[in-house]
Structure formats: structure tokens, C-alpha cells
Picture (cartoon, helix red, strand yellow):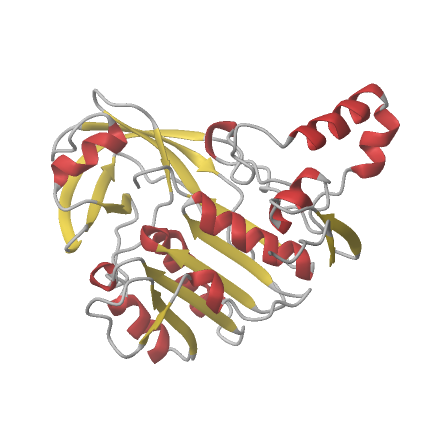
Length: 318
């Protein structure tokens, strides 16, 4: 005979008590009860709580809130430090695809040369449209060695060859194709200031994190940096040259992680990135870039600690 399962368990998030029923995760309960807020992602999509809808009991509770606006205001609990992008004017630039090269077995580097430099800060995003394709929002970065011309946009993308990028852009990028860029966009902009800088980059999400980390070493050389990056497969750890530069400039808190055990070097830790995020402080500035699940999980950790959180989401397939 099976032991009876407890009807509910309790936990505290952001100082508020949650009652979690069997079958629900604590994250789902916190989102549904408004203890933490979902993050607005690309094209107005929610990065957390992407399921078709909450359970029936949650729907009934939300229906009661809709009938009584006062309840909705009382129950709403946004992130302690909601990230807001600084007010900046959007600019548009025209250029062309300059080069597509391999950074690893499944990672490509796309370089776009613009007719005029686009003003943006590390951690910003731009909307890129290649001739004949659809717009895609990405974070410009540097080569893994740290180089980039003033009029260039450099991107790290998933793929074994240029043909693999067709699913992302709607067209196969090729040198000479016209490119339109619009930006800066996003909430992940690097903001110099006090507190530890915690940087989390999953897969090619390392691109935006690398731009922030390198800028911080020049602008705030005394600021503490903790960087966590990695990939599902150790073969996709293309960022090692960049990590070596950071270590040479004094960054000692660098963690590499990979989910799969195959050919995992001894300096690469097992498991997902979120398992290696240090205990966060209220004074931390946390930047996270990668797939929706990684960015959302780091957001929850930052919200629980009361840390400032700045997301750099990646579109699917980037």
C-alpha cells in the first residue's frame, strides 16, 4: 500500500508563503500567484510560464481577480528590481554580409559590415534582416579573440554551416547579401556601477555575455566578476579563447559546464548552468543570455535574492 501523499507543502519566496499542491512545481505556483513575474521576451512572448494555460484552480482564482481589480493589484508582485532599458533612439543602418566562419563543430560566426557605425552598448540587441529573409533579434558581440571593427556587427550562431542558418533567418546568409539593422533593443545593456557582476551565458548566449565581460574589464577593472557559461555538448564550448583573455586580466570566478559526459574535459563541470550560479546577493547585477528556460531560471534566482536582473534572450535556433 502506498503511503498517502501530503495535500500541500509550503515554501517562502520573496518573503511570501506559497502553498504548493501535488503535481505543481514551485515555479508554476510562484508565477500563478504573482510572487514572481514572467519576463517579457522577444516579440512579446513570455519566457516563463509558456504552457497553454494554468491549471483549472488557477484559472478560477484569476477569474476572481478579473472580477475584482483590487484583488489583482493586491496579488501582483513584480520582480524586486525590474529591468528597464535606458531611453534611447532607434537607429537604422544598411550593410551586407561580410563573412561566415566556423567557431566550432556546431557554432558559426556571422559578420555584417555596415555603411555607418551603429551606436550600441555591450549587452544590447539589434533586429537584423538579411535580404529575402525575416527579422531576427540578436546580440552583437566580438570575435572570441576580442576583435571587431567599428562598423561591424559580429554574431555567434548555432549551425555547422551557413545552410543551417536558413531556419533562423529565412534565407541562407551569403557574403554580399544586403542586411538591414535596427537598434539598439533589449534590456540587457551593461550598466557600470557597484556590486558584483554575475554573467550567465548558455550556448551562443555567451555572445552578449562576452561583450559585457570584456567591456567591464576595461571600464571597471576592480569590479568583481563571476562568469558561468557552457553548452549541452562539450564539443560546443567554443568560447575558450575569450575565457583565457578574461583569466589573464584577473577574472578568477569562471565556471564552464556541460550536460553531456561525452568528451568532457576535466575543467568542465557537469550539469546545467543554473546549478553553478553562486548564491546571489541583493547588490548583484545579473545578466543572463541563452534559451528561454535558462534565462527564466536565472531570473527566478535573481528575483528570490532581490538582485538586479538584465536578460538577453535568444530566439529559437540562434
